[in-house]
Amino acid sequence: MQLMAKAYRSLSLRTLPSLCRICEQWNSAAICNACRRLHIRQQARCCRCALPSNTVVCAECESHPPLWQRCAAALPYAEPWRSLIADYKFNGHLGLVRFWGECLRQRAAEMGMLEQVELVVPVPLSQARLRERGFNQSLILAKALTHPQVLPEGLLRLRDTQPQANLPRQERLNNLAHAIACNPRHVQDFQQRHVLLVDDVMTTGSTLQACTQALLQVGVQQVHVLVLARADGRQAPQSDPAH
Ligand SMILES: [Zn+2]
Ligand SMILES: [Zn+2]
Image 1 (spheres, helix red, strand yellow):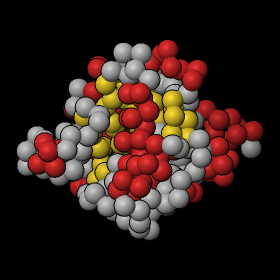
Image 2: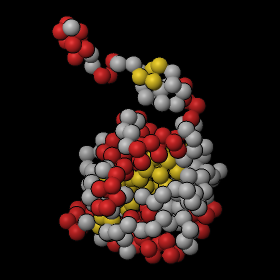
Image 3: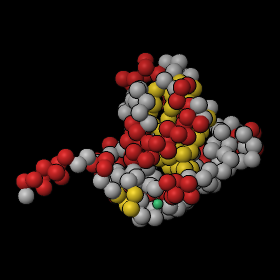
Image 4: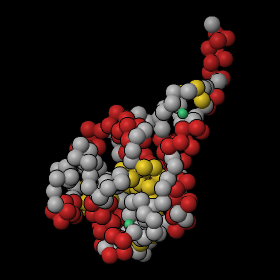
């Protein structure tokens, strides 16, 4: 018995086989290579809003450019990712965090983002939401990028906003503009810096826009946006809860 316990202890977790979370085949990775090839496939996307586009910058961004410089999404917000992200965000399943980090790093590298940014800042949660959930899903993703300068509380969410999907765009933005602010302790750190803003899912982009506005207001030079998944439409699905 003792011998077995010793043998078990000597097994590194890395060597234990696990099931692919998508196809449930035995594999040593959380998502097997076949599923990666099948489901990560990306279509061409606009470099400003990360929506599918045949041109580098889509027509909407040409006429109404967003406040940030560039926006990249690691995955499409579609099955199987949608359910896996919901498991992560709402049920606290952290088993795919390393995989999410790989996807984000790869996408950021393809866009040449990581060399350009000096600070990484997650989209913040309100204190109430943080207490309820126990973690900020965007902060975990920001850390999984393994950039040396992550500011966990660079931005603060001063209060919760109601689910945004039903509100007209301008109302949504006004609502959020008063809810998100830079942390006064970091205002100096932000001066003239290039900041990477990280979030889990981008739907309308309103939250990211409010965050970008808050960063630019305190002297950030450029904001880049990196999200794990991008919904292919400008309207948020109504069933999606807010942050
Ligand atoms: Zn698989
Ligand atoms: Zn665009």
